[in-house]
Image (tube, rainbow, N blue to C red):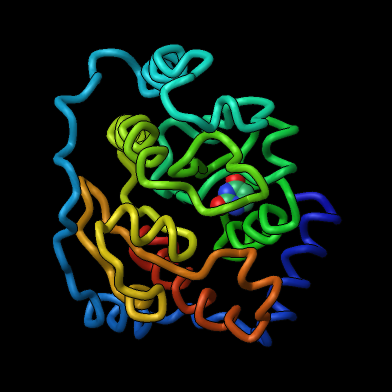
Length: 238
Ligand code: URA
């Protein structure tokens, strides 16, 4: 970890008001006690493309996507498709909503201000950005960052499902209301969804607040920190 990375990491802890880490087993117990599995009404896992390596399969899925024109977003000013990035064998996957302006320019999810905060969040549980896999429900930037529309989600989410079924993470963190609602097929508010764990495809899905919301509402960082400690406990990182 570079000096800059370390500074960012400590700054995030400082912003959270974290002055020390609990390394005892109590936490792990709490995580298990609080797990309220709710099976999500999501399409079943595909009969997966498991003969090739996950890395090769992701390349094939990206090739299938091609220069996608399946929905209207291709004609509404997107510069490029933002597919996903990270470790094809990751135990932890983050799913956001859709690319913003920075992601549309750079072709990588979560590289703007919210993305930089996400990187700090990942580092705060002892992982590096390249250890996890990061993708969005929607692969093209909606104009003016408007919410994705149902037909756009319908065309795009099968590619996310294939990414999930290829990476086969143990834990999926849904970032924000849109990703959580769309993965879980619910209209429940994020305040109700977060803090719970859902069985989702072959993973445990945990909704939490979107990093862009944390930039506007720093007081919510404490809850995200709680969620991330639970992620770390599930992954056995304590
Ligand atoms: N917000 C998202 O939901 N996804 C990104 O990739 C960037 C910002």
